[in-house]
Image 1 (cartoon, rainbow, N blue to C red):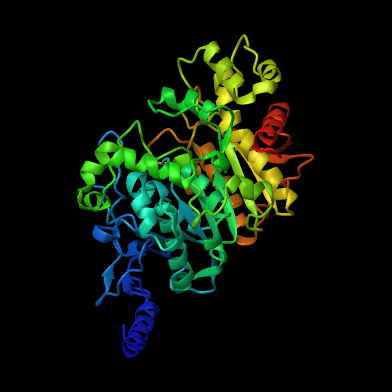
Image 2 (cartoon, rainbow, N blue to C red):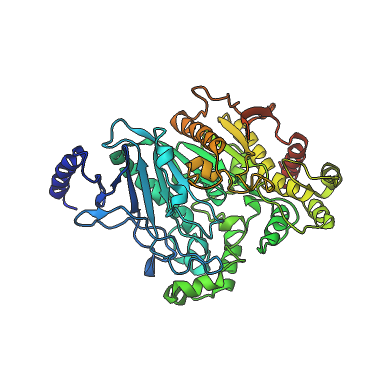
Amino acid sequence: MPTCVRIAMAIWLANAVSAGDTDPTVLVMEGPVRGSLLKPNGAVFRGIPFASPPVGDLRWRPPVPGKSWTGVRDATAFGAPCAQNVGGWMLENSQEDCLYLNVWTSAWPPRSPLPVMFWIHGGGNYQGTASTANFDGESLARHGVVVVTANYRLTVFGFLAHQELTRESPHHASGNYGLMDQIAALEWVHHNISRFGGDPGNVTLFGQSAGAVDANVLMTSPLTRGLFHRVIAESGTVTRNPDAATLAMTALGAVMTVKNGPVTYSDAPELTEAERGGEALLGASLNSLRARNARDLLTVVSAPRKSIGPANGVIVDGWVLPKSPADVFASGKQQRIPLLIGNNSRERTPPETTPEEVTQAIQAMYGPLALRAMTLYAPADAPDPLYGGRAAQWVVDTMYRCPVVGELIWHAAAANPGYEYQFDHAPPGREALGAVHGAEVPYVFDVLRPGTKYTALDSEISSLVERYWTNFALRGNPNGGQLPEWPKFDPSKRGYLEFTDHGAVARDRLRGTFCDLYIENTKRLMGL
């Protein structure tokens, strides 16, 4: 866009913004966008493109900046979800043209710069979208932040490694395109968010499940320096345990390969192995792959296969992730920023799991330490009221709880601030299941639906969570006001905050002996 046009547009925009009774309009780098006013104040902008559509020759390439447009672009409706296939349920409305983001602010016109919270949705990097009311940012924004949610390429379009893709890449890398999309959206925020009243110098990356995994691994990427300044990770770390994951995922109809020992990203396939997997799955001719329609490609990777490779499809590609994220954390070379990370008390419970299967998984993971582990996970007469039975405790300890503790020990050892939590509250009507995977998300966004079984207690817990999360976004410390004190993580005391049915309670050493053994075994397997 010519400079004179930009100046004229800026003058016009200033006049439009100052008129409080008109639809909010903002001039971003590509052109003006018009959103919607919120009541009693604030604004929301939906479906803003942050990159060119990754279609045709741009399929399986790093995201390309979007082109400028003329006129005012409507930003009142979500963009399409990224192409995905989960039993076929989203084939019709998901698209490859999906790189859109959404912005909420409670102050309009913009005043002083506000902290920014950038959400990465979960879904195993093979499903999900930011284009949904489930992640409506209005309630969080009311706490004095600007909220951004963004789509990113998924499954075969977001995480395919292939020898021909590597050969054509100037960085000699392939895969991790979904991570590149997240980085491109963060770069868009860096250049544009001040026009929405956000502070590009105070950005908190937060996500759940695969979104939490992605947020953690981006802390180790040289491509993200300066793009975010804090991280909140809900139920996702830089380590994975396929033995425990198999118990949980098999019950959910997934297929994973059991290896000997807990896998960290240093055990994820090297680029060449991932390339072979991509070629075996889809074929060796890249030209023919780019010519195939999305439906055909999605059919190959439909559930239960889900993603390309272990660890949500993320690989050490030599470019986005030059080294294993787990190794980077263990050596204290991750970004030196505050980290708030935790899990839910029940996360995943594998049904129809025999005691023998649990024992075999323990033996496969712990090797010479298996006897001690089996003593800890001895069969009990009755399930634990909070953590469930033996299989549930094993799965959540090894997939979520203890990896959180281990990651925070690494992070704190490098003199970085850390905060741990456990969320115990089950939604009304689901008390018997406990606080399962994703149970905290409606409370983070306060999307507790009117007319449902949610009660005043649920609203109180949601308010509590939102205040802690936004306090952390403001200054890297969740404490403030009259909130119960959240202890800073220390490797010796391991203080954490537990969200119970009765409020927030500070405690020490979550699952202490269980996590002690997990960390000892992780050191053994990583050679630390």
